[in-house]
Amino acid sequence: MRRSPASGGGVAPGATIRTRGALTGAVGTRTAPSDPVNSAGRPDAAGHDPVGLPPGAVAAVLDTAVAEDPDTAVCPGCGAVLAVVPPLTTDHPGASPSCAGLFDVTVRGLRDEARADLRTAAVLQLARDAYDAQHQVAGQPAAAAAALCLWVTRGLDPVREREVGARLADTAPTALTPPDRWTTTVADVAADLDVVDLPSLVRSWAEAVWRDWHGSHPELCAAADRAQRLPG
Image (cartoon, rainbow, N blue to C red; front, top):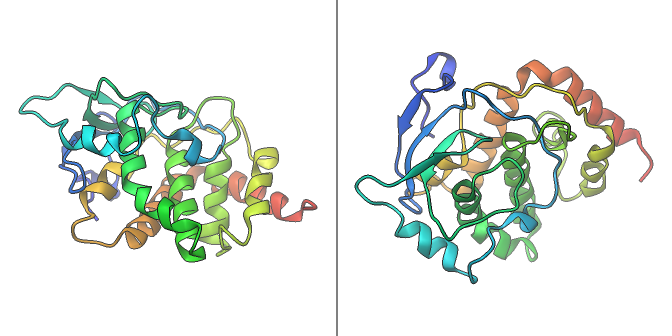
């Protein structure tokens, strides 16, 4: 997986990195946010798909979005710098339309197979939590980041422990300061799809996001433990 040149494998706030998405080509550059936003809750990412386009049109729009000098915008959550695609809109808190669209394209295959395969469903939930942990809104529970404690540190299965994950909305802290840099974003995942399989990329991405939250690990894991103790 591509890493930024910043020390410690992180991305310094404001640093710009050029990359091109293997899946869409829509990734022009990315940068770490200099003024990152806070954490959102963890509504189902299936409800966060970009709206205003018919099924299948998101990929087509992103595939044709790149020009020699495309207009770009910084995602307020993860800091990815992506081509602006005017038809795209999103209801995902803390994410730009292009970033949410890229996530939708990247995990579409997982979503199509998740109902029939528990392993795929677990990878999809891991991807949703990694993405939501990077796209959060001030004052909302940091439930997605706390979920990564369960999946990455505690080794729980996101599908078998779905009820525990749902209880994080009641136990996760609401006043945490998110990381000021992200090692990996969905732009990196999409850019590496031509050389690495998606489940491996998602696991590495989730682990990287969890490491980036290192300053809040005690609070997040305490919330995860409380969610496990609550009655189902």
